[in-house]
Image (cartoon, rainbow, N blue to C red; front, side, top):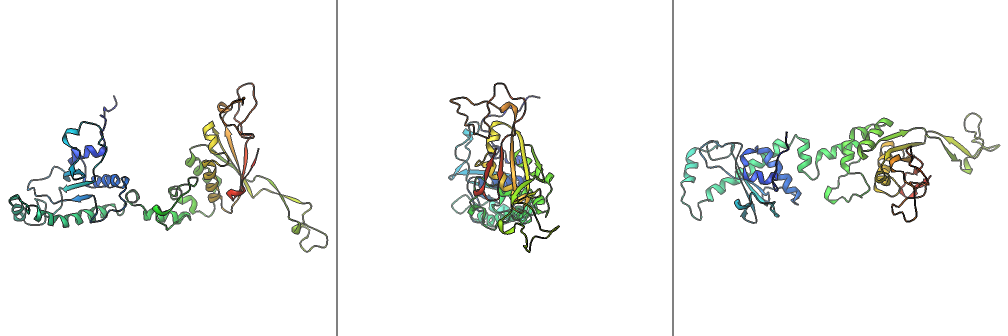
Length: 368
């Protein structure tokens, strides 16, 4: 079937302003709150809420849950009737008055007797003609806010959308061991650090005391959107300090328990290897030392593996991205990383670059 023909400026807020009766009450308030939060509204309070609920004075049945909605910007109606078919208005609404069609104090659905509604409707127009209805709007405003809050209280996804510091997110971060009780707007997260939502999303994995290699592969692969394979038990020679080397007549040199011949020992349980790829040239640059992806991967692996392990990072460059270097090349190839001398296109993916990642970001070393 042909695609929908949408005109320029057919935003959801504009369509809601034109036909508010097509939307449910809770979804209308939800969308409007998200809209105002994106415009810098930091708190929704009873006396500062840009979403106002007014009392209906109609005695007939409303067409839907939302009887009417009036959008205004700077005290003027938004958008004006003449501009409904034009482009998007540069300044959006800063206030919305919603008249619910299913609860209130007046009207056919109100809790007060009908003669209150009739008396307000028959009040002559003047300076004080809107005072009685405005007084009742105080109670309608509180009722509308509490009704929406009660509806959204046990819906975690809504609380995450509408609250800057969602308690559900904090609970998940506590399970993941990454909780921070500092307000979100006061935290200054580094550009290279994973977002706290990532730790909350993988709370079930971080909560486990032991984490398998397959679980780490799944987390890293989904986070970076690239294939990831983890090799375990990578052997590594470690130099024995002089004070711990075996010597004759030494108390620590016992055969079969602590005696070791030589100055080095081979251990296979202290290192793992993370292979990423095949990668394009742009993705390969993300995982080179100092890049944002490299630092983010370092923190995630250290959080997942625990015990501050030493691991090797092997970004695999796909064969189609393997290019030779020439004089005047501006691609910024690095020695031992993605620079190759070749006379023909590569037929295999290259995994020549191996980066040794240490627990401390200041102690990272590189090995080709």
